[in-house]
Image 1 (cartoon, rainbow, N blue to C red):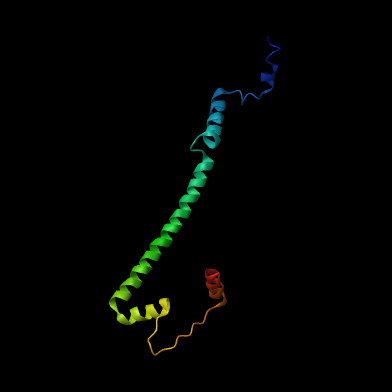
Image 2 (cartoon, helix red, strand yellow; image 1 turned 135 degrees about the vertical axis):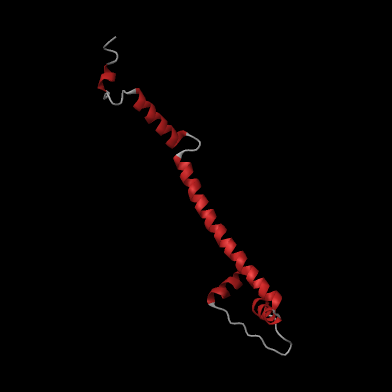
Length: 113
């Protein structure tokens, strides 16, 4: 019977310690096998960081749009300027010339095709 367990004698005594073995199994379980393992937590933290950046972008965009809306509601001059720039509106006695950058020209040609 002593001959059967010779491989156990080849294992260093440190690794035969049941407490150390339990800790190693626990760490491996928590790092790789658990549903809340380290890899999934890292991915979730990365996603959370991305979502916070998006939230900050949209909050800033909302504030900017509120400011623009307030300007449009308070002044007819700003409203006319907005209509001329965004919707290319003109007065009956005016001529309108639109100059596009090459990038805008490509974007418009893709929409029409």
